[in-house]
Length: 90
Image (cartoon, rainbow, N blue to C red; front, side):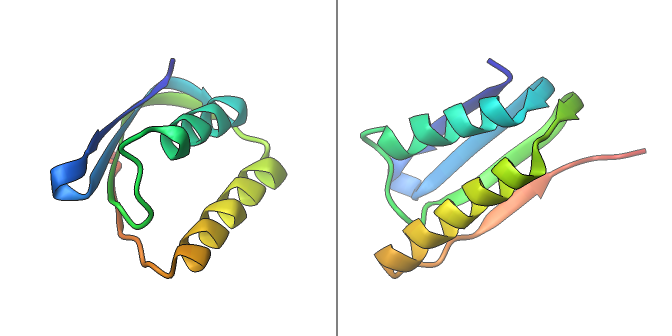
């Protein structure tokens, strides 16, 4: 799978790594796996590594719906989240 993640519960941290060509369906599947993981907690800080992406095929309407769902989960939980992206470019 082009998206892998690891939760570090004692740090309140989610580590995400993208590989190869990423699609909206893969983002949706990884998001669903994350929020159903036993170590998931709303508001976990996120470190997202985009270094190894070689391409993407994104359905932007679906992607925005996913983001809206994330915002709703955070709002209902009453927590804030912090996301840092690693995205080196030439």
